[in-house]
Image (cartoon, rainbow, N blue to C red; front, top):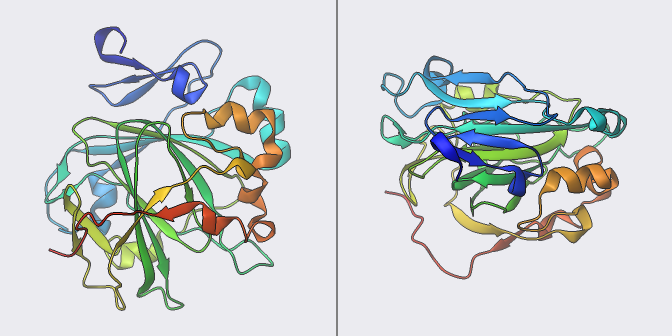
Length: 276
C-alpha cells in the first residue's frame, strides 16, 4: 500500500496505476494517458435495483474505457480490442451489495454466439453472476456465481449476460479485455429489474421473481486458460499486447467453442448458495 490511501496496481495490472481507496478512483502515472471515467449513479441504476425507492451512495462505480499506453494503440486497433478498468464502491444500496447494473452482449454477426469478455480482479473481491437467457429474454436457463480475488481471470462465456458484485469492505477494481466494436445490451435486465438473483449478504442470494424460469444458482471457479494466455497472477494487459492473437477468442468466438467449457470449473464443496 502506498501513501495517503493509495494502492499501487502496477505489479498486478502491468500498467502504472494506483487506486485511491477513499474516493475509489484511479490515479494514472508515468506515460499512461489519464482516462475520464463514466460514472454510474444511483439514479442511473435505480431501474435495475431490488428496491426502486431505496437510498444509497450517489455514485456507485466508475468505468474507465479504453485504457492503454500510447504505443499499444496500433495493436489494439488492428486486432479490434479494448481494455477497460471498472472500480466499484463498497457498501449497500438498500439490502443488496453495490454491483454493476448488468447487461448482455450482442451476437457476433453470422454466428449464434454472443461476444465473450474476460475480467481480471486487481483489488478487492468480486462476485461475478453469469446468466444464460432463454429465447424470450424473460427467464434464464443457467445462473453461475464465480468468486474471484486479485489475479484471478474470469471469462464471461458466449451467450451469457453478467453482473459484477462487490461484497467486500473496500473498493473493487477490475480490468477487462473485450472486442471493441459492439455495444452492450441493457434493456432486458432493466425490464426485469436486474439479474436473476440479488446478493443481500455474503453468499446469500434472493431470487428475482420476475424471471421465469429461474434455476437454482450454482457456483463455479475460474480456471487458467493457457490457450488464451490467461494465468492467475500474471497481468493480462501486457500478455495481450505481446501476443494479441491469444485474445482472438474475444473477436472470433466461433473458432473457440471447444475451449469455453474449460474456462470455468465446478467447485468441489457446497457453500450453501441457496435462496433465502
